[in-house]
Each structure stands twice: as C-alpha cells, then as structure tokens.
Image (cartoon, rainbow, N blue to C red; front, side, top):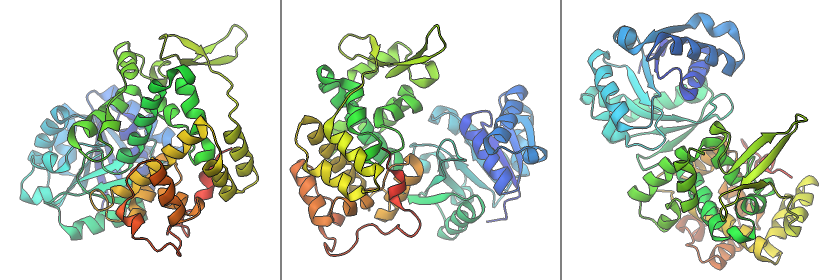
Length: 436
C-alpha cells in the first residue's frame, strides 16, 4: 500500500463525502479531488468539508470536479478512491466499473456502504484491484463520530488490510472495528435491531404512550446520548427502512422478526414524513407566534401529532437521580429491581441489547471488543460488555437475559463470573455515556 497523498472523493457533495473529505484533508494532509455530478455541487462539498472541521486551512487541498470531466484524471493520480454515493448497487457498480478503467495498480478503492456486500461490489475490479477494495464505513458526522468499520472480503490481502487500518487509526484518528462482509456489518446491525424492536413495541403499546413512552423508558439513564426513536427520526425513516429491510431479507438469526418494519412507519414514509430532514416524522417541532418551538409526537392510533407529553415514570426518575450522583451501579440496581410495566420493558430492552451485541461475535466481528467499540464510537451507546459489569457481573446479566426469554450468548455463558467482563476501560470510561 502506497503512502496516501492524493485522494478522490466520489459523491463529495453529500454529508458523508464532504465530512470524510474534511477529515482526510485535515488529518491526512492529502490533496483531495472533490467530485460530484456538477461543479456547483462539488464546490458546495468543499464549503461543507471546510465547515465540518472548522478550519479554512484545508481549502488549498480541495479541488472541485465532475464525474464527466474529471473522474479519469483524478482516479489515475490518486492513492485512494473513496466512494460515498447512494446506497445502491445500481449506483455504485457502474461507478466502480468506471473507476476500474483508470485505477493504477496499488491504488486503494473503498466504499462507505452501510450494509451492501463488499465482495459483490469488488467484482468490478480485476484480481489485483480486489486486493485493494474495502468497505470503509465512516459514521455521520465523521468529525464527531470516529468509528470506521473496516469491512473485508475473501479477495483482500491481510498485509494491505493491516496497513490500511493503521492509516485509519493513526493518521485519520478513526476507531477501527474489523467486520466481516455481513448485512449491515456490526454497528447498524446491533443498533437498528434495538431501535426497530422498540418501534414495534411503540406500535404494540400505542394506547399506553407509544413513541414517547418508549423513548422515556430507554432514555439517557440507560446509557445513550439520544433516545432510540429520536435517533430514528435523526437518521431518517427511509434510511432506517433500508437498513432493517436489508437485515430482514438477508439474515435469519434469533432476532429475525424484530427487523420487520412496523406498519405505522410504512405509513409515515408513504406520506413523505421521514423525520428531521422533512421536519416531521416520529416527532415534529412547530414554531409558535411568540417564537418558541413546541414539540409534537406522532399518535400511532389516530395518525395525528399530539403535544409531546411530560411523562413521570418513577423508576426512570429514580435511576436518573442515581446517575446525577455518579452512582451508576445504583442506577442499574434501580432498573433491575423496580416493579411495573415500564421497568419490565426497560429490562427487556437492555437484555436484548446485551444478548444481541454479544451474539454477533464470530459471525460479524472477531471479538466482543469490536462490538463494544462499534456501539460506543458509532452510536454513543454504553457498550454491552460495560453494562454486564454495571449490572452486577456475568451471573446477574445471564439471569436478566433468561428472565427476558432471550438467548444467552456463548461468549457470556463461558465467561469467568469472577472477572471483569469489560476490557476497554483503559481507553473508554463507559460511565461518560450516561445522561440524566
């Protein structure tokens, strides 16, 4: 693998393309060809890249261009071609075929796909090109979310993989997680499993509070920067659908049915209510005549938007107070021992999250630490292994998973109950991810 001095970003006008360009130009100090379908979009990508890293000092490294006029020259002169176009084989494969015509031997090519088959996409290249083709799934926005899932396939060369990982970690400051070429890889498989199952429960219990209730039950005190369904609204219901549909059709594990998109989400998508980017989805905000912004939540039963309720859930309030006092184990004890419908649901969701995070070890990622890093650096969620220790250890966690009628992952069943289960404490104090 050559030193990376020149990079071509294809899809440079998108959020991921421009954000990644900012990282590569700033930290990698590379010259970056910013390519889009037309020049004005490419120029906008440059401005967005500069804004993303908050410094104009990279401007001289960013060169605007178009696919039609500049792709051949850019690719021929690049050490890395970074493709960040729409999540579709129909879009990516023709571009790969064009890249293959102009790529020099030894040039890396990667895609930021969040779940398409890397092996299938690599087939546009010859045998040498396949050695240098990877999935480099950056998370959005790249400046703040430092996860990079490095996705390999059978045609890769392990020596090149190691050098690329070192560059991503040491030069670009990414938290690299090695993942196999499986649907949605690691972070999205774990995260969207939980978010979609919570959406299913919102539909099931629409009469008890629906969307708002579920996000209150799984609020910041459970170890996440943003509540699960608020996260769906942030990423977009259409994106959420694409990811869970992919998982539903291409996986068949114990959580298979939890990837079925709820009917109310189908309805919202058909009406163009996709979340924050369309200003309404699971929630919406309305500016009043006096300039204030009021929050509303979608009523699954009526199809209307109701004022967001102020819910007072005793166990959640008590756990939050413990978090405010930095008593994280105490907060978990509250969750474990509280009675009532809401506390039972919270225990179920935490058990599911831990069970599923650890169940993909071997199939998707080589170690549980990879799953832990994926959720910390890709979602800002407390890693599953850290929750095991905070809940009282291996035996207590197994008991909670069994009480939820969920499968106990082999890695947890075989763990030494007398030892700490979480092994990333030297680089990540998971307590920082709790919110009260």
